[in-house]
Length: 243
Ligand SMILES: [Zn+2]
Image (tube, rainbow, N blue to C red; front, side):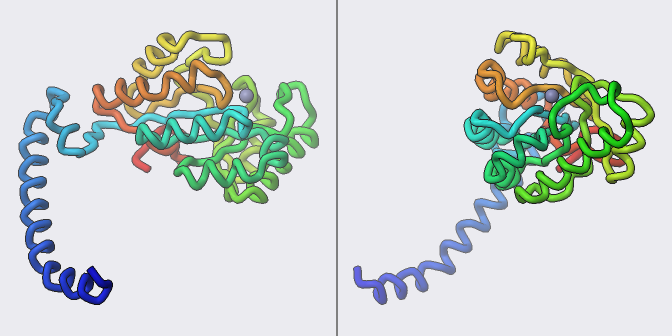
């Protein structure tokens, strides 16, 4: 078919297509309504209709990137419809700015995880300040925006660390569930850890473990079965909320 003929044919077809899609929308709405009626039972029809049933939100977090593992992790998260918060080390953000951009492009949120991953509670205020401020700069330079979430390395914090973070508009986020992926947890154990998450809670995972990457599809299934969706972490409350 020549381009012009095809265009004309498409123009003729358009009203009918629109009509068809409208009745499809109506049909889908009906399916969604039906699904909503059985939602409490965690029904399969809700999934079949493509309606993500979010009875609550959890915060998936991945620390210590960006690294060579980041692209595969982002792929897995995207393929499984998950969004997460990536707590980046400033030194790696500075070394891999394009991967910071890739995190944002994949729909992730980017947080500050210090520059060199020290035990911040053993440092003076000026050093803490440098760790945090340099990371803010490195992430922004990579296209990650200015973070408003901060995770201290090892979850170690004190009043000084918290106050310096606050000076940069950062809310400190620890975690409710530790996946133990940094401690060589199996893929099964990581999936089970994610299964313990309740509404609003945050889980600690990392950018680099192979078992974490392997767990992603099953984490998605586990959350769906519980009616939980992956959300962003609110800087106001420190809890997971709708994106
Ligand atoms: Zn870390």
